[in-house]
Length: 361
Image 1 (cartoon, one colour):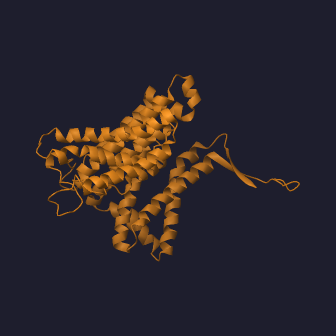
Image 2: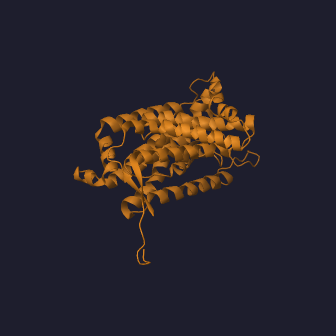
Image 3: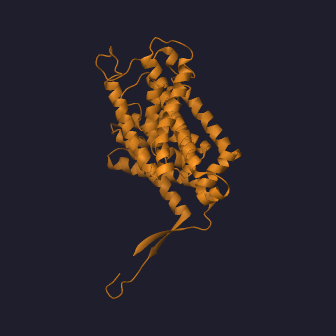
């Protein structure tokens, strides 16, 4: 017996659009079962996860803070995935972007200028792009699997950040805590509405990035090239498109957005470098990209949903006493159901029975 997947000749477009909603409903059902097994009231737990964070103005600001990096990274990953280039290392590009963007406020503490913040953002995006260029180079010229190389580089970036903060970049007046010097006001991303919360301009950057990428994919030749090469590299070559150039473009583009998200997070939300600057935004953004159907506008909505799981996880820890790992379980369930629903929509499962003759398979 063997199991094969046979592509459906005409998959339903309606089912394709409904798939993320179905996956979300299945995730809620599985989450309710999980909370019941843990001895918690499922209704109360889901209320703490998905409703309580939406009832206060300050929590809506927190939702925007957590959604900004998810949307920004997810939009960049959508360009990669639609061109059939699998960048799994956005977490590392996020980290390197935070490091390179922090060079000015950490090493040049005496320089106070309005140009500091714009240069930090540019340096952060450049650092993320250059770090993403490593798996692009390996794939384009050595045919190396970009999934492995981009993923392994994540741990290099995280260890490099830890080494810096515990060594050369440690704050000499920080009472031996592993963190850098605090960023001055001119190196801090300003809040959008300071009176009501701490949501900063990174959320605006994310929305603008989503709109620009949506326009690029829908109305420009570059967007057409991304779609064609992603669906058929042979057809793309016939049209005169270069797959190697697309590898470079997609990785550099997604790395730049991840790096911009990294420096925006450090400058806007944290205010200094520390060993842990991300709860896993780079990996969660993969779920965001697929839940949004690799459409930049859909990614905005899915980014808000995944940001809600972070806030809900924090609320559930306080009100229910559950582990912070519950958030990761929810995110993993969501990705599992999204991929499962897509697989069953676009493919038929065939079970093939074969008989063994003469003792030889």
